[in-house]
Image (cartoon, rainbow, N blue to C red; front, side, top):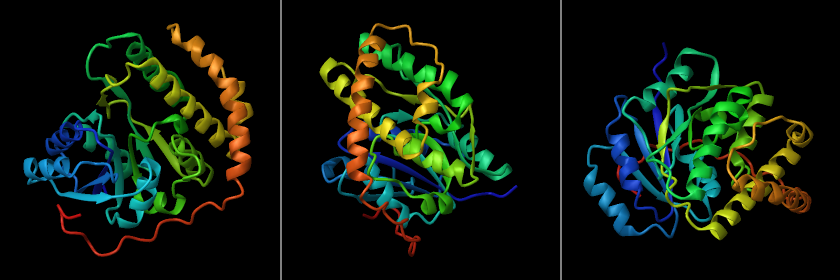
Length: 291
């Protein structure tokens, strides 16, 4: 068995939950060689300082990137020197067995990427939180086993060299995961779902209906753009899926036709912009804790 080196990337804006995410990484049975915190300019320096103080034995590297999460992920690829890159969001908590289970298929099989599901950190409270928990559960129970390109990026591991070659398409933020997974499969890269490589996902922030609606609309537009780009729209429209048993599914059903039209217009505009080139190879190792 080939033992890979692993960098876990955690993207963060101003989420104090980052400390809990890092605490869960500090408890991993399989220690990552590096933890890259991809911070935005809005990330408080006090949060960075507290993380470095609390986790002196975690190989932390902090970097600040302009733009959103997709920009940070794209820019960071040039800095990662480990052979495997795993992604964990700042609102997720990984059990001690997580990283070992997630990376195992990349060491024992012909896989380019692997991914696991999420579980709620607590029983859902409020209608929006209940809907999002049900929706996320349906994705992992029904869609991902059927087509691995439905895996959200937030709990996946990738062969770094292959991910760097593919790159993240910044033109479709919020659906860059679907896009890169589809392109990986078309290039011959095999992905696999690892049901026991699960993480806790905190959905407690989902409490405002207008905020939720904006986020879901934005996501539906981005996903439609990715499907238009990759020629998957017709297949998705004809795909059968068990509806989530929650009233909010009707509101989302109303959003989708509008989001599709919006996506078609947006893709026509941004498709003229060349796809950004892959990130450069990683340079010399950075000192853990620097940045």
